Image 1: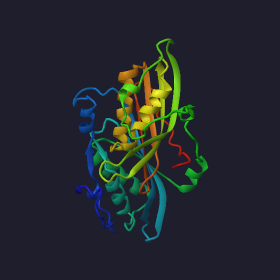
Image 2: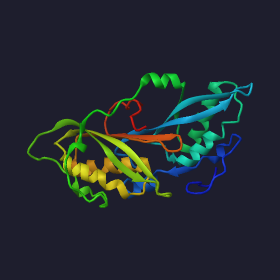
Image 3: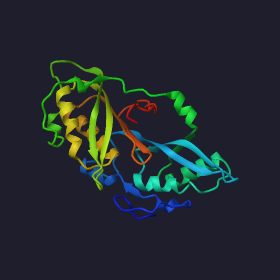
Image 4: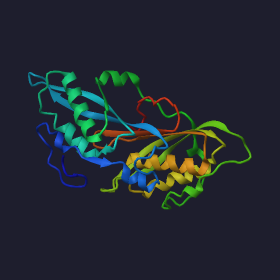
Length: 275
């Protein structure tokens, strides 16, 4: 297993090397949220990764290209550090494989070993993804709200609340203003977030102010979504809750975490305009 390469000058590999992959234990951030190791998590879900720079050689040495989708379950002990993931994928570029199935099996084996849990891999030809097109998140767009705000204030869970005058409703709220920063390099990470819930109406202005408060936070994508989920659950107490974020790609990879506390179908992996 490689030492973490995030934020360091890097020499790109020219031979297949699974030791480049670096795990990040999920438990450390979950402890900050009051989620203890060994206890049942308040959510289930998946991290959907899309790789746009997958390439390898066939047996004749001819380069092959494709797009890959990886689904890493929320229950896995580890996440995969994104730069190590990119370096690992690049290590396939000059490696010969019997066929696409061998590539898929190798990817699944290596990534499952690092995540500590079985992951799912799909390899898709570019024309298949092109046919799917793009589609924005459905829901009520909170960005329409004309609010005055200090964008440098940190996310404050006390901003979250509900309208006590109304009974439970089912609602889907969306914002494209989620931004956080890489916890090591400080590079910006941009995302759209979709919040589906059943419960008393969440106050949109407070929720939008809370989400904008992530702008200065240095945290991984998966941790941001779990923080949003946990804060909404504790402050607003919805009966059902799902939080889904789609991040713009960096280094040929995008990460799209989904967390839910009920039997909600996993979201379709459809790109947005900014992806």
